[in-house]
Every structure is written in C-alpha cells, then in structure tokens.
Image 1 (cartoon, one colour):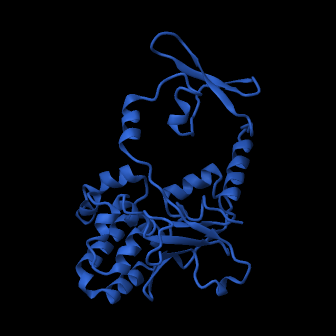
Image 2: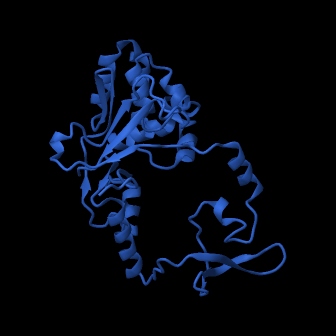
Image 3: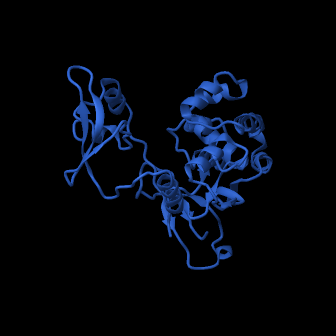
Length: 291
C-alpha cells in the first residue's frame, strides 16, 4: 500500500490548535498516530545525516561533520526553535518571520540560497532534499521545526483512512456525498455585474442547489469551463510569471521485515556521476512504506 498523499501530517500534536481542528473534522478522531524516529535521511560519499526527532541531535551531527559551519548551524537551529511553536502556511510564516530576528534573514532566502551558506556538501544536500532549491527557506525550517516538535507525524492508514474518517463525520452531521458525479457547471443567479453561485449541475443533468459552492480544483481548469467567468487578471499574471514547481521521487514498498530495509521514511541519494536521466536534479528521493 503506497500512499504519497499523507505520509506525514502537520497538526498531530494534541497540544496544538490544528490538532483540535483535525479532530473536529473527523480527520484524526480516534486515529492512531505513529511517531517515526526520523523523517528523512541523506547519504553522500559515505556520510549520512537524518532529520531525527531530537533537534539537538541533528544540530550536533551537523557540527560534527562541519565545525567550519558552526556559526550558520547554530543560527539555523535558533530559527528552528523559534518556529517550533508556529503552524500555518507560507504567507503566515513570512509575516511572522518579519518580526522575529531569528527568522527575518531566512524570510528573504530560497532553500538554494540557504544551502550555499554552508560549506559541507552533505549539509547542502540535507537542506534542499525535501524542499528543492526554488522553495522559500522558511519551508525547510518549518519541516524541521514541526517534525522535531512532534507535530508532523503519520496517521495510521494514511490518506485513505483519513478521508474515510472525514466522510463519516460529514455524514453524521447530515451531509450527503455524491461520488462520481462530475460537475458540468457552477450555476449562477443574478444579472449585470453581480452574479452569485446558486448550485452545481452534474453530468447526469441533475441540478444541486447550494447556498455556497466551494471549488477545490485548479482555478485554471475551472474558469471558462465549469465557471462562466474568465480567470482573474491578477491570478493569470501569477500563472504566467511563476513556472510550476516540480517534485519527483521513487516510491517503494518492500516485502521483508522493516529492519532489513536499511532506512526508514525517506532516503535521499545523489545521482551517479554522468547520470543524465534527470538533468535538472542532483539527487533522487526513495520513500519506503514498510509501515
């Protein structure tokens, strides 16, 4: 069973507001939460470092490998500790970072620029293995902070069980699920410049009235197709200006006891010298699902 959707989830610490929100939605209500010892491991030239549960252990390992990077390593972990109590999206993190001296420097960096502040190649790979070089450096710091704070763990059953729990909660409140009903159009009422969504027509020709319609698809596939309205100009400019971020990995499950796999979670390995199968990447991520 390979599940690349929820292999770790922010909001698994019962002391956080996000955990309570997940429980209210049914997503974590009664779910077993698994707490792996590490989230990912990087190997390079016979050396290895992992994002372990204990942030101090990660810091010590980085200092052991590269004492010359000591100043940057200590600064990095001051920022990780400052972030450990925060949850939210990238926008919230950037706004918060502006007011915290420990974080302000990272709000202006990409992960690639962050990695270049370190001399040791293993540390550079470690800092760009999960969030590639085009991401905000705060994204990498957030991964480290949330995992080490016990707030980014694995709900048993992954995304399938999580969706089933949420569906059960929805139905218990009187909700009705219409699975396999492809939306043909979002129906609008009103005239002139102001029109409001009043329901959805599905492919079977049935109109489903609604007070609100929540769209969870890519806006570029909705506007002008399901919704009789063009993509807003500001959003169209963002689509044109920002190339899509690409993420690739090898997913694997092993038919053997997990102790024989040799790693847990994710293992990041460099491409062999001269390998041209993926010219825009310097490493490959292998994710195991023995759990």
